[in-house]
Image (cartoon, rainbow, N blue to C red; front, side):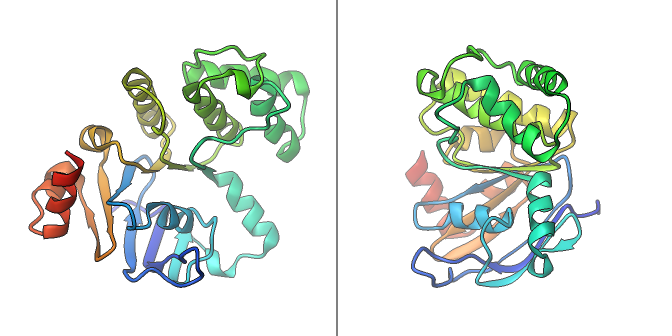
Length: 246
């Protein structure tokens, strides 16, 4: 078994009301792998994703990222962890008052001060790697959702993370954009050996690209090695979800 980049044992995220979800998650993930969190509304995909990324502290259970017990991290260590484990929220929020290229460069300038010209060149190269199709000199308000998402991902990549967590990245994009975004996530896993964890309703992406599937249901939580094992499950919850999502 490959060394674990992420290890969750009995992980229970918190609900918005402060209570815990009912079903613990135990999960192991090495680098260079694509994992999708799926399930019906109410299963807590966003809450589990945020807990796995160590954005939110869980109600119970343990989480190790890069071998670090996240329960024992001080404030400085937690800030350092955020550079290694990038999180992109649904809607890909950006700074509204600066243009696309500045959105990509500013976090790198803040966390890793250096030559501004070199940082800008690295940002341009990162956007090229992502096949960014938009103008870099426009404010985010003048860009479409696909372009804003790629800028948010580029902003993360400038800090050289080892894992990236994305919450509903395919939201509000058309099929052509979804195909281009899918290619980006595969490049991150294959060419940069990053762990890619995605909470999504896009079952076509899950079918084609997920190496592991975490199924989150209000009544049950389970893990599967790929689409075949997932669709071959004998659990009624899985088939009810697939029938509803079809």
